[in-house]
Length: 203
Image 1 (tube, one colour):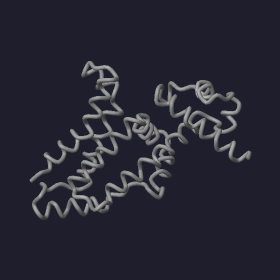
Image 2: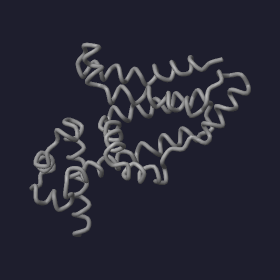
Image 3: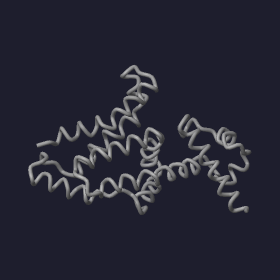
Image 4: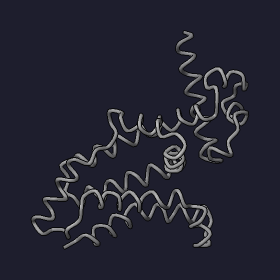
């Protein structure tokens, strides 16, 4: 009974933290706000998570464990290279719109806490690009796409997908648009990015 209660309480905390982090980000969130959102006192919150950083990591891991298998499945599927680019982009952007804290967290942790990222990359379902690389080589050999290193192509795909999330305040300023209109632009990019890349590498 106690174990079930612990799991329920922890799930409630993680859901509350996710909600606060999405609205205010890591820096803007406060443990008291998270406790209030979860309907518990701050002491109990600290019993489960001693710091905001540990709580943020837990929320991030839960989200990433949902995303990583999706991306890994796309990259190692039997789909064509074009379909793989389309599906990777659609899955990544759609997921990140729902979990906008993911890209900034990774960037921050790469600089501040590389051990956490190393631990993340060693997990079972972390995406691999072995099959993707082979498909790129095959498509170059049969003349379907222009010569390009698979690694460079993958970096291009990631960059075009990630940048609008980590630079959203800057881009909203340049484009003079509000949050709602920016979200619409992001949703449009689920197809815009893949179409741009496919056209760029087409032979």
